[in-house]
Amino acid sequence: MRRVRPGRLLLAGFAVLVCVFLQLPLLIVFPISFSSAQYLQFPPPGWSLQWYERYLNSPNWLTPTWLSLKVAMATTALSLLLGVPLAFGLTRARFWGRDAIEKLSMAPIIVPTIVLSIALYGLFANLKLIGAWYGIAIAHTLLALPFVVVVVVAGLRDFDVNQELAALGLGASRWRAVWHVTLPQIRPSLVSAAFLAFISSFDELVVAMFLGGANMTLPKKMFDNIRMEIDPTIAAISALQIVLVSALLALAARFGRGGGMPGR
Amino acid sequence: MAAQEVRDADLRVDGVAKRYGAVVALGGVSLSVAAGEFLTILGPSGSGKTTLLKVVAGFEFPDAGRVTVGGADITDVSPAKRNIGMVFQNYALFPHMSVARNIAFPLQMRGVPKSEIDRRVIQAMALVELQGYGERLPSQLSGGQQQRVALARAVVFDPTLLLLDEPFGALDRKLRESMQLEVRRLQRRLGLTTVFITHDQEEALVLSDRIAVMDGGAIRQIGAPDEIYDRPADDFVAQFIGESNLLVGEIAAPDRVVLDGGTSVTVRGLDGGHGRVRLLVRPEKMAIDSATNRFTGTIVEAVYLGEAHKLRVKVAEGVELLVRGHRAVPTGARVTVGFAPEDAHVIRGAG
Image (cartoon, rainbow over all chains, first blue to last red; front, side):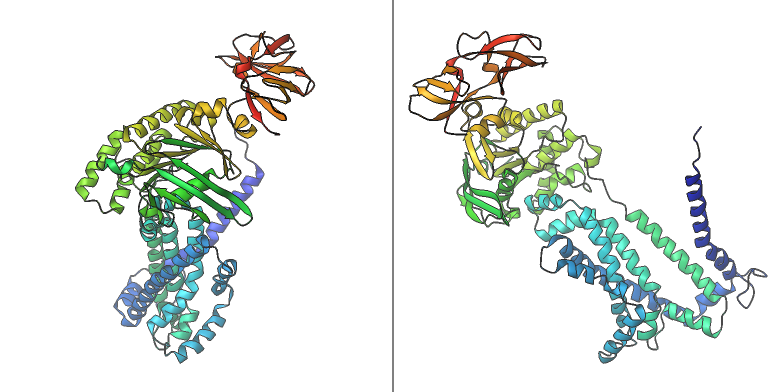
């Protein structure tokens, strides 16, 4: 018989509590999204798909959704394009000030978003970028970059540099060695980085409020909806968002696994 | 495989120096490897042997000196353009590619047509006896099989030179011995000029045409295995290769040395003069009840090795002799040991 230690039991209890706490909102949001009532009300008096219908038939909702998707995808591409080379530089090159640059690349996480937003507003106003979707994408790239750098740097630190040397010795140029040997092996990090970048943009409200102008991203539209009318449409959208993120997570888990593990 | 003629390339290293900050990794090393020769660079870790190999492979650029292969100066050529095959210590097989794709990689990088790649990959897999393993991933292979893949990948593109960086370190003893012989056979068959790096002196003796012993970023001695073993140039070489008894003394007369303990011994090939010398006598050349150069002492350790007995004999305060022979003698016994004059190798100069 295995003895159950009290410490373990306590830990298990705590873990269950945390899980319940994290899942609780879902238990509210999902039922409300299927509510037949006209207002946010829990528990719902009856069931219907009206809020999903309203969302899917309303340009007022779909336009912000497409905008958010577009911005999130551009942010993902842009932050990988900048972040991956930066991560290579930070792990491989030896140059003066490397540590400082590595710390500095975390700055967007440290600076309060509202401060960043005000600063960007001033800058973007001069550049006539306010209201442009790519303006928001550029700002979101700034916010996503730290995640990409942290995750890819970690992946590259675990990567055996001899692999790349071997590729060079076998006749590959530096570019082809990175493309055929290094990137496929750090794919799990790349997938995680892309996922984080996408989510951080898709979910972002503050920057989008400052820089969006008349254009509304989905979070901003939801925010306005809560302030103005409060109907269960946002519950339906939240439910859809949760499904989307879960699907992305599942995809990341599926394609983010390493190919073969290095032999020992 | 085609292009047999390019394989007959010799390697020359001339005055190659490399330092990392204040640390001198290579202090002006020169050596040459004849076409088709198997040369081993033997040394302890930190001796500079790996740095030298990296300079030859192109992964490190020397501060001074030249590297030429087949008469062509490759010192400033990028590793991708050197056409040198290399087997890494941990093989560095690409874990996300199948065995066949690993072996095809150098051919793809050279733009070889697909049909010819297939043909040569099959040929290379046959060469290392891995037929039918093409679709496996490296992680699905044993250590010995992984090494064969690494070897096939290193020779499939007809390199001018083959570099082996301690490739047997990860294998168990039995597999190591069979892989050593296999590598040697393959190397002879392909006529590949080969530089092999190891810290294992036994491996070096078994495999090499010649051995270069390195220490402190310099080559201490270069020569055939028996030359290195029987006539080491200095104490370091003597002690690094095999076990040895080093007896310190003073030249008294031609062929006569008085050891520091007072014992007078006879040697061969010492034409007189003055000064300090060291006598190297290998344990297997020491014999119990020898007729000449006798020492009496007590056995302090007796180890049975299977094919021989190894005895540690204390002959004077602080002086112990190693004896390797076929007689079992218990610890504590009094014995007389000695060696024949021709079995002592004289190293001149102070140690």
